[in-house]
Image 1 (cartoon, rainbow, N blue to C red):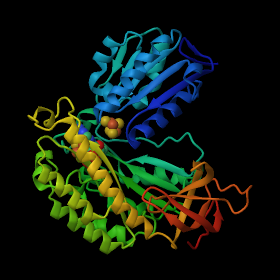
Image 2 (cartoon, rainbow, N blue to C red):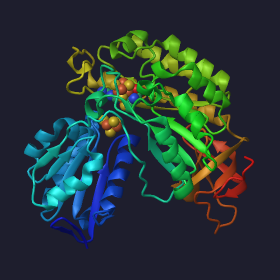
Image 3 (spheres, protein in one colour):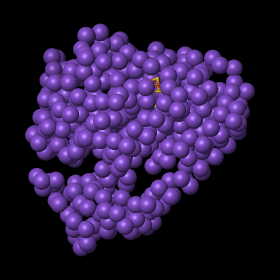
Length: 456
Ligand code: SAH
Ligand code: SF4
Ligand code: F3S
């Protein structure tokens, strides 16, 4: 039993559902870590929980609908407390509390680290409240919290977004950009490596490569400092905006021994006129120039992107420019979505002549075209050996195999050399034996165990 003031916290269970991006998954981890201090144990079983929490995403309507229907279904639980956080809660908390009578509290994206106070309030009998104010402190300062035993960690380095792309809800749900101080991140990461066995970090932000602008620091400098940490093997970062890819950062992609051979660089559209309407602040030519420079700096680099199909009033010609862009950029994979009008954004007020059918058709065309490109790119992997960090097991075509990720972010499946061999969190070298657009199979040629040798 833990007692806070007059309130007793016996052992209870918290269930949590997370939607959206890595930022949200990491926020969930923070929440669960805080709640441990109030005697909450994490459960995957909704039926077994005393507290139900949702961490929501507002990026597209589909994500919203899934969440609303799930929240509606929790009405049957009479004895539990229910809270909703994240991007939908940031902008719509009042409506949520009004519409869902069984909902106890809602909290915004800047209130993640106040979760203990909110749960305390809920258990003190305050059954209808929202905490959505923005954090007004000058600096963004936090310490990374992890709840898992894996060697991979997300590290927040910047929050918010100042870009206001015409279609995007994020600046409204996450507020203005604010970076952590470089030294704080380095110290934080050192602790993760030293005390929690972390070997791979993913630096997180909605617009991660504008890190440090407010402090005269930069992502390139940060990576160079992190590289010096003994025991840290791999550095990733996501998500970047093409406007903020500096020459200095490109150079680091060439020189760094620890920065992953992968960059997710969302382009959104291959048409300059659509990019203008999206307010993306770059042209296709500029983007392709970045791609060329990156590949020159690091010939091993693998690129991926995000595409929005059927932006308001997109012409057939503009759509075809995106197909053409896929040919030129040669992405390893893409995330593609239909445009979804988000309330309050500029694009949602544009008069639009496209139908849902046309949008769907264009999305399918983009995906089919990319798969053809991807098939060719992946087939070139056969016969090559990749360093892989093994994440776990998964079932592939009815067969259970080990699954790991290459430095360049590709998932690789392989069978153990001996049936009992446990590769969990091992570094292994895997020789690729077959590769299609969506899967890579290989065999282990060397197993380094849980730590790479010092010389590598
Ligand atoms: N900060 C990143 C993207 C974050 S949102 C960037 O600027 O690239 C992740 C992706 O969701 C975006 O890249 C975009 O492709 C997609 N997205 C955002 N708003 C959308 C909308 N209204 N409709 C469809 N897709 C959207
Ligand atoms: Fe949204 Fe990314 Fe544009 Fe920011 S930069 S508004 S997060 S798409
Ligand atoms: Fe969604 Fe918010 Fe991330 S809207 S994509 S969870 S920043």
